[in-house]
Image (cartoon, rainbow, N blue to C red; front, side, top):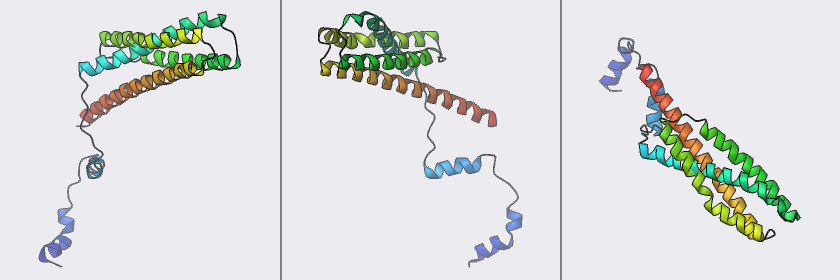
Length: 181
């Protein structure tokens, strides 16, 4: 044992007088594991992209609802009935996500409107597929493409919601840290 170690052990009670600030162990642990990230700053462009995505998804939902009313003239085969059931399910999911997105608080009303407008423009491809489906109601490729479109739309909406929630949580945690200081 060196002289320094011996000195520290003998005088430990005199050296242990101050305690670290509240939360020090947690912050130090995060730094050791490398999990602490620098705060993410959102620029207007990011909000605009989110708004555009939401607008595209909302438009898809509206087109889906409107097109589902006019599709009752088709012959009902088991494949078509399954597709109609899937379409109703996905339309309800898209509408629920749209409601969740439209109730989210944005930094400005313009950003929200831009996002919702972009969601409305997403359904041009869907409308083409729907026209193909009306022409050939039993074509499994068209049915599959329509279902994939719904799934993709829900994935996009989920990603947007996750990003918005992480931004909200990040801003809240930054406020909490500022109040702790």
